[in-house]
Image (cartoon, rainbow, N blue to C red; front, side, top):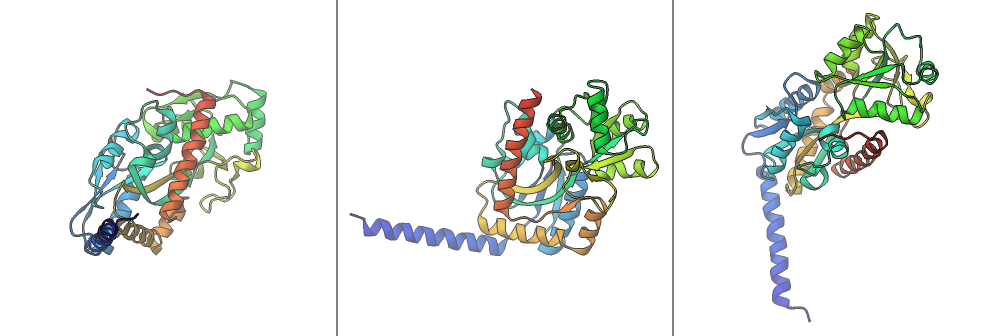
Length: 325
């Protein structure tokens, strides 16, 4: 038989928890919020975090300050965010690397993106441009694939590091298109790899639109395609790579998460405020000009996206036999 006293106590406890959560959300935020960014100041992830943090500061009435914690492919920053109190006063601007590809490339990762964090929303997604040096005799992705098939192992591609998002996106392309290119990784980030491309030392790369567009406009690089499923307004003549390699798609993305066990009312409040920031006219125009697709998906949808990305890139890493320490 059920114990009425125990049932009453349980019901009371549930009501109390609900009241506490509601009160907590009503009072939130009552102090400064720290936004941890897993990269140094000045990069795309940092700029996005600062823009959103400024919007949150204005709309929520409390300072949201950016705390840059670069190094170790975002592992340092992610570990700090995981260990923070689940009270909404530490938010983490994660990326495809910190929330997905690190799981695929690292045998031992000190955090679990699915277990240790509660998703708020994706903030933006950014397809890559498929770019070549003008000396390469190809005018489209289809041309380049045909050239690579005719010259197996003779062409090379640059990336901003072994196991990074752009590297894995190329590996997926090689697998699906059944071509063989030589990987040339650079430790200095996308700036160095693009500089080497402009100098003619590397034939091909996948890179973010903001990095590529100035060189494409000056005809120092040639854009062949875009890795998303539709052309970008920033360079509409670049057709989707999927038109030459059916089924291919790869985008870099960023998103906001908080430590696991953060109360749902606080998650809901942060989601509402971040989406409002993303939909503001100045943010929308800036993101579209940069070739970004604006985020705003629900927390559950973002969680499912992270799961699917981990599965996708784990398979790519396995196929390409990529191992990082």
